[in-house]
Image 1: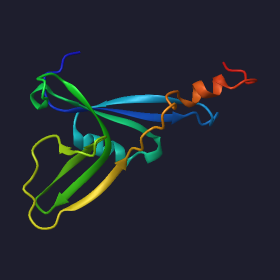
Image 2 (image 1 turned 30 degrees about the vertical axis):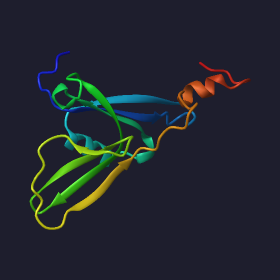
Image 3 (image 1 turned 45 degrees about the vertical axis):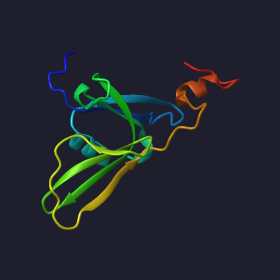
Image 4 (image 1 turned 180 degrees about the horizontal axis):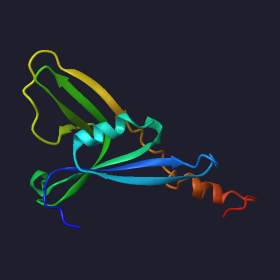
Length: 140
């Protein structure tokens, strides 16, 4: 795989629950190229299914000159009569955008699309592994 466009992109981790076995789930990770596509996908998902978002930042936006990642806690959609843009907030609470933003004229509407709650420590395993680890339960 080669990235020809050096722009931010996203890894979105979503829990998919087995409809026949609600105690079983898997994590799917989606690669998303644009912040507007991320916003559209988030609008279509139940917020509780989103387990994490990572923004991969290109070298030209990095203090080290290399690709780096930022874990995202919030995704906002800003809009006004002059345009729309997506604003992200990382785990430190720092808000940033991924590209050119319109010069907003007048009132700016700010819509919180998603807030990812931090996972409590010790919760690293998914439901499937927790279920399999329970004594007396048979796992397949």
